[in-house]
Length: 554
Image 1 (cartoon, rainbow, N blue to C red):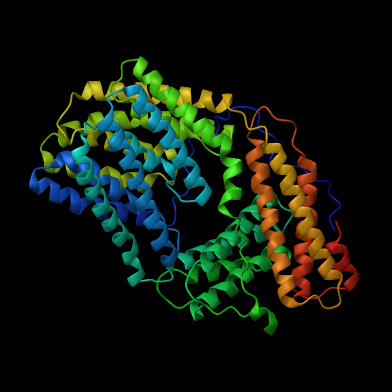
Image 2 (cartoon, one colour):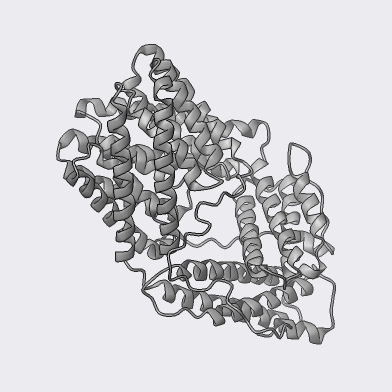
């Protein structure tokens, strides 16, 4: 048992960070999937409308096509369901927006409707963990529809076009299942193995070990959720489950893990080859199944109340401010505000900086490509396709870099109904971006989240209960393999939730001091209990019983 005093891995954040906000990260391993999918989803409908001379309808076609950006990290059975809900959610938002636009010309009313839609989209996407890209694309589509000239008689036709392209986007996203039906599960398992290897490199005590451990358990939990959302168990899924158990074992005992072997297993999951068979330490362990603890939807809505209030207030005020400045497209300010809101104030500030920088650079890119885009309708469509591809290629490296492509694409979309004066478009976009970011961030600061500390206390209590229950099972003569396995998984989930809750609360303002030392102590004792449990299950070499009891003790 370590005698080192606990040190908080995430100190409370009470300042606005600047360092690292614009730093580029590694690209997503599947960056090409949403990039290629969105091009494949947009190109046929846009080309058809181009041939028919109806580019004015491209906005409605793109509403459905942009659904191809979602659910690329989900197994195909789950992806099919999620994409249906995304398309239905998109149609619902666009339907409300088009009806509102046809019934009233009041910009104030339309901004209010847009703000309420944005808040609902934010809460539902966060609660159901639909993303990336989350609520921003849905808000962009519905907000733009609010300010499109509309009559009630046109609404059914425009919704039918969006529904048709949404169905096409569904087919595009499901097509890879024909080539690699277990691809998403393999990627999730590989991510868990890599994260476990990263923690093993620290030896459980080296620099950054606490963050590496939290990342490892989050990746393992995501892998279990991916595997258990698939259809009936298969040989491939069983092989992947054994690999995830290997990752869990490495997290429980990093000093005994072989990081190189974990990475080799992760590498072997690329491509269409067979999944490697990783035998477990004893036969009983082969019977262990993943138990992914999933909280009901209603329990995830409560903590999102401050985010909903921030989104509704910030989007409404940003739109009103844009109207007050005489900008013709207040939905740009509204969408900017909607894009800011993250788990806490510190992250919201970072996103605000990224949004402003990306949009300003993107406006300059638009200025450079305007002559090319104005060569003709076909050139305009091709430029939009190129920027939609570039946005998905770059956005996983940093949000601002993706915005460099998103901004000119959004500006070009406004020209499908007719070319416009570039200088006016650019000025309005910059002004709306600054207004939306400023007003949106002020709203985030004004709407406090004082309950963040209470959620940390509840997460601490849940982790303590899970650890105590697991320790009682360890003290029994024969606790039963499934009971012990379920307790181990529940404890791992509780510790992962504790770290995520503490990290989120650390970036909030206007709250009492967080119990950082208690969090670290709970993590230390909980992870010792996890190691003792894995050893009792035969997943680790046996130790002296006295040592095992000591490991399980807080």
